[in-house]
Image 1 (cartoon, one colour):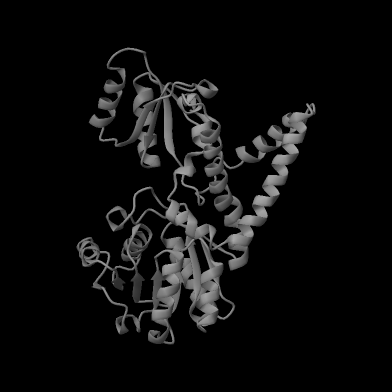
Image 2 (image 1 turned 135 degrees about the vertical axis):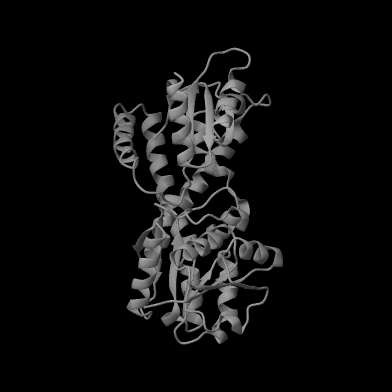
Length: 366
C-alpha cells in the first residue's frame, strides 16, 4: 500500500510532530493541513511540514490517502461530521486522542468503519502548539492503534509500519481495551494526584506548614496534579465508566490499608511495600507511556554564596538548557540538595556527564 497524500486537521504539538516525521519518512508525499489560524499554516509551511494549508475543511481533503484528526476528543468528532461527505473510497482516517470509545462510536454512527483506525501516540510535552513540534517527539513512545473490524488489513499494516518508521512502538488494541488500560495507568493516577494535592491543601494549617516542607516524594507523586484542567475534564467525561470502576477498586484498597494501619496489623505495610517495590522497579527501563517522564537530577553543592550560579553557568556554557532549578530543603532518600530539571533525556545525560567530570555528586531517581 502506497500513500502519497496526507491530511491533518489541526496542527498542534502532536499533529505538527507527526507531519514533520512523515516529511522525513516520505519526502515526496503531499501534506495538506487545516488550522483555524492562517499563522499556524504559514509557520508549518515555512518549516517544511506541509505543502498546502487551508482554514476550511473542504473538498481538498477528498483525495487524501490518510487523514489525521489532531484536535481534542470532542473536536475530532466534529471533524468526522464535516469529513464524512467528502471522503474518497480509499481514504483512511485516524486520530490522536487519549480516549478511543467516543470516537469509535461516532465512526459507527456515521458509517465510517471501513475508513477508520484509531491512534493514540503516548508522547507529549508541557509545551504546546506547532512551534514546539518535533519529528523525534514520538521516538521510543508507545503508539496504540485501535482499528475497526471493517478497515482493510493492508491499511492497518501500512499504519503499523509508518509508526515504526517514526521511531515509535506500535501496539494494536481494541478501543475497549485501550480505554480500560489508559484509565488504569493514566486517567485514575491523574485524579489520585489531584485529590492528594487537595487533601494536603484542605488539612494544612493557616501557616501552610505542610506546603512549606512538601518536597521530594510528595512533589513527585503529585506532579501530574498540575495538568490542564480543561484537558482532563474532557478526558474524564469521555471515559467515565472505566475511570469510576477503577476508582471504586482503588478506594476499596485504600480502605483495606486504612483498617490494617488503624488496627496495627503487623506485617501488612511491609508486604504492601515489598509487592509495590518489586512491581514498580520493573518499570525502570521500559519505553515511554502516557504520563510524561521528568528528566531531573539532584546535585550536592556547598552551602555558600554563588554555588548555584556557578553550576548554572557551567551548564549554560555547555549549551545545556535548564527547564527548572531549585533547592530541596527536605532531603528525602538522602538525595542532593539542588534539583535540576531538563527538557529531554539527552540534556540530562550531557549535564550528568559534565558535572560528574567536575567532581559533583549526582543522584537520580528511577
